[in-house]
Image (cartoon, rainbow, N blue to C red; front, side, top):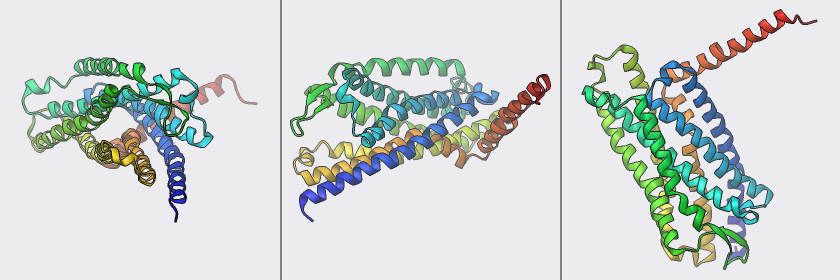
Length: 327
């Protein structure tokens, strides 16, 4: 097989993965995110939980991330139209939102893990740090921090004619921001820091859970702590799995030789799109992780959807029919 035909084949596979895997992950992610929000907001147990508050905020942000990032990525490959090339505002604002949503989601995941560590501590003064008021404050600080630190994206992203393709492209040419984007946004904020925090506090929380049976807290609170801890710990492990490929390719991309050979570049782009799909699994997977690891969450989902909302809908329909009898 010649180099040109190999590059064409690799580019075709890359496009198909972007379309079919991207749309599939987007659909399951939106459904899962909405169901997570419905469950957490419908049950008083979760509404009073600081950890569940972090997970609710994370679910909202994950849905926005899937719409802005993954859906637009897939539709661009389907239609062949890249809106970042035709609209300077969209070029800047899309990349800005991607960084903001990623940072907020990662910070909420870290805060939820830290919160569960405090909630499962045997010392009361540490347990008091796990409260809804502090969760709201920390979520607000995280959002403000992400919004402010991502402002350079609005400044440096612009439309330029690519020197390799000759096509107008939404990209960055400033050397300083390129380094800032690679090391701070992608490697530290989106990969290394979240993985380090979640793994460290996840292990500390696991140690606390072994002693949770000896606590004098109410039974309902102990069961809630066990449930949320298991959900968080498995989510931490899944986060490590989904972020590892994109982090590895991030280090490989620092080598300038990866883009000099056209065949190697096509192979790298294929590996990159696979890593990106794994990366977006982080945003689409939480609901399915909770379903798999927590029998109690499955029961709560059934109660919320069938016994609560469906029952209310049927009752409302009966009341309407009693007032306005069907002919």
